[in-house]
Length: 425
View (cartoon, helix red, strand yellow):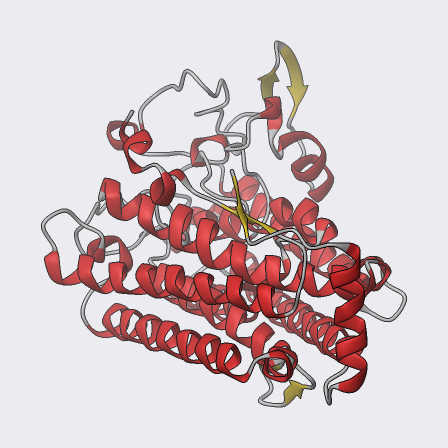
C-alpha cells in the first residue's frame, strides 16, 4: 500500500530547487554523495559482521557445544546492528528493494526449514503447501506438484529452489531470519519470558537431537555463505560506478533527493510504525515481531529508527567507531527553511528518545514480545509512544519535501495505521 504525501510541483519548481541550491551553502550533489557514502559504509559493516558470524558458525558446526552456539548467537546479534541501519535505503532505491527479500524477509514459515512444535505451529496451511515441508528432514520435497531433489543442501539450492518456493513469500529460506531460526529455534514462550532454546546438540552428529544434524549444519553453513555473497553484491552496488550509486545519480538532483526522503518516510511510517510495530500491538501477537526467535526485536527496531536519523543528519558511526559524515539533508532543508529543519531534527531526537526507552526496557525489564502482550499496559504504552514518534516525524518529513519543492512522495502505508478495522477482518 502506498500513501501519497504532498503536492506535485511543476518542472519550473524543480528547476528552482537547482537555482536556489546554487546560491545556498549546501550543494544537493554533496548531500547525495554523503548519502551514498553512508550506504557503502553500512553495507561494508554488514559484510564485516556477517563474516564474523560465518566464522562463528563454522566453529559451531565443527565443534557443537553450548559455548560455540552462544558465540554464534552473539555474532548474529552483532551483525544485526549495522544491517538494520541500512534499511532506510530500501525504499526508493529499487536495486535495494528488489534485493532485500534475500537477506531480511520476514515473517517466515519456519516449518519449511526444520522441525517445529506441531501443537503451537499447526500441521498445515491453506496458503502454503510447504508449511511443514521440513527440508532438513526430507531429501525430496514436492513444489507445485513436482518432486524436487533436496538431497544436497547448498547455497544454490536455498536461493534457486527453496526461497519463495511455490511463489509463497512466507517460504523464506535465506537471510538473517533463516539463520536466526536455526540458531535459536522456535520461541514457544508466547508473551512469557524466554526466546528460542535450540540445543547445541541439534548440530552434533555424535549426540544428535532433533534428527538430521548433519543436514541442519549444512543448511546453516549454506545460509551463512549465501548471506556473505548477497552482502558482497550490495557493497559493490554502492561503490563508485556501482549499480545503486549510478542509478541514484542518474535520477538527477531532485530525483535523488526524493529517493532519500522516500526512504526515510516509508521506513518511518508504513514499514516500521505500521507493519513491524502497530500490527503486532493491535493483535498482541508475539509472532508479529521482527526478530521473533531471538527476542532481539527491540534492538532491531532501535537501529532501524537510528538509520533514518543517520540519513537525515548525514552521519554514521561505523562498527570500528570511525565516523562517516558530510553535507546532509538537514543542511539542505536548513538552507531552505531553518524552522522546518529544526522541527524535523527535534522530531527525530524525540523518536530516538522513545526508541532508547524501548531498548532500555528490552534490556532490563522484558522482551518486545512481552511488551506487546495483551494486558501489559506499561509495555504497550512504551511501544505506542515509539509508534507515535515515528508518525509525528513522518509529518515533518512531508514538510521538508515541501520546502525543497520536490514532487510528491509515495510513502509506504499500512492498514494497521490507515485502516485498523481491516486488520481484524
